[in-house]
Length: 132
Length: 74
Image 1 (cartoon, rainbow over the protein chains, first blue to last red):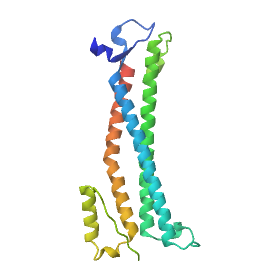
Image 2 (image 1 turned 45 degrees about the vertical axis):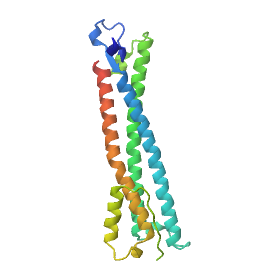
Image 3 (image 1 turned 180 degrees about the vertical axis):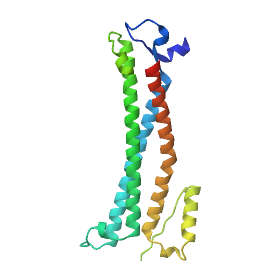
Image 4 (image 1 turned 120 degrees about the vertical axis):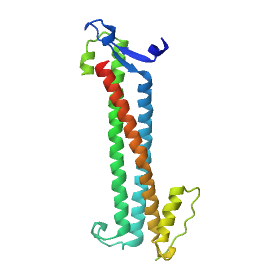
């Protein structure tokens, strides 16, 4: 009973009454996904902060080294600037990766939440659609 | 070339090793561009995220697959 109380049982109304054909969603998995989603949001915040730091250092370096009327640094050969831009690209890539993971987790959680809601109000016959 | 003084508190073993390795390659610390230290620290910060991001990706992928399979097969 305790084991069953930790799961959400979802059953399609009017599509057979075999209890073995129901959909089960473990509440612990759902909570784990929520916690992992929170971790991803924290990572995103840290990466944004690091990206801001890189941008500030790049700006400081440009002011310290280049003349105010110098052309854009895009045309200048400079190891420090090159390395800073490389870090910017690295962080931006990691940020995109985390955003993609976050979206994946959020979509799955929304799907599970919807299935659980339909179980609470079993008037709809659309669980087959959700499962598909 | 101006130089800067850095005092690190509670630096990790990896940070110390990285600094030692970097400074061993030059004759005098005064030869190092002060911004190089920033780049060095940023490099370590970015690199230290990689294992964490890989773990996060694995965890999310496992949970998503598990929940999707549960929804699809019951």
